[in-house]
Image (tube, helix red, strand yellow):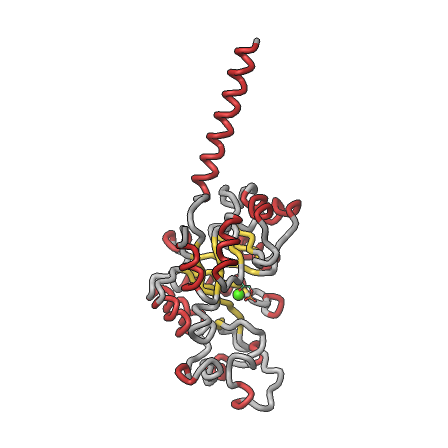
Length: 289
Ligand code: G3P
Ligand code: CA
């Protein structure tokens, strides 16, 4: 009786160990987190410009994050705020057009704006890129893209339009789908729309849903991406325990981490990616034993 109990316990322990190895292998636990340049290498060059993509490439950073929105005439452009005011000279060029919303300007008008001088004179003349231009520059550098659909409530049907541009530019082929592209949003509805339109696309939900709600979001989100201030080891473990829409454990990319001690802390939580304005600082921190 005792021998049978020992055998049963041993079998159970071996099973649990095998399962642990499987999970370990599936999500690369123990591997260093990916480093993602937030809005490009945005501490070195104006955010969401081609110069910021180049700056990330110069640092050897493989992932860039950016934000897509839509002009009045339907062009998809890369910019973070819903207004052009902070990151361009729109107030000078179009003084009577407050509050200078992206959605109220045509692509030709936005193409006239200087999106670099606010950051530094060395970047005078940098433009707000179209999504197409941005994808080509990221592809040119053989980088990977974390693409945020920004303010989707302002842009009905932007999900399908974004997928169309991605497809036209070759970003929905097998190679890109297998690990070069993630589409993310704070909007669960927007993310669900992306998943329904192209289920093969890897998707990330920004924010920190409750642990109880994770299985619901895991029907259409492969990643859960909370701010680093709201993340914890237990939350990351809870996310990793849930299988995503493609049958793999959900992953976690945290944002926005710009200093070394915080990078080490979140790496210790077991996150899969760290989104940062200073990818050089974070990468260096992660190299430390
Ligand atoms: O990628 C995460 C981060 O970009 C979300 O916040 O405001 O910088 O777009 P935000
Ligand atoms: Ca973003």
